[in-house]
Image (tube, rainbow, N blue to C red):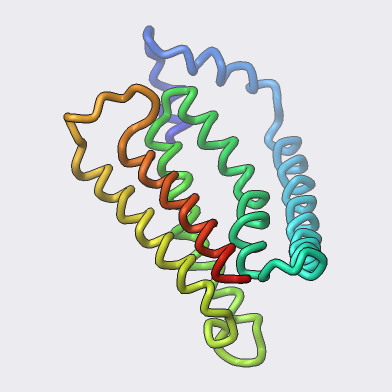
Length: 185
């Protein structure tokens, strides 16, 4: 809907219309075929990634919760990083933040539900290690900082490199990884 609105409302200061017109020659059928093929490749790679994560955990001796939190999370989040960075570079800051926050919401609200639905041995959260409690607590703290950063916009922090809220999020993430690494040993 936003795309259609944007193409119908030309703006003299907005150069996105010239970027949009580049794709007018691409048919909907071609787009859907490419999207379908790419979606199938992503599903196949996601299934393979689960096996790779298990092999990394077994061959290195690292806990599966640490491997999942670090390696699998980074590799499955790579497309989100590309979308968010691209959106931020285009000036679509709302989309960049909504992509990350929405993905987290979707993962917690839908993916855990689907995992539990297909897990036949009982409630899935009863079978996971307590290391995930730490991961969830750190995720909760980082989400809280995002909420605080959106509600309260600090005036005292001059952005030299990054905002104070995102700096705290990065520090918390590194702290979470170190804590999970040593907790899992």
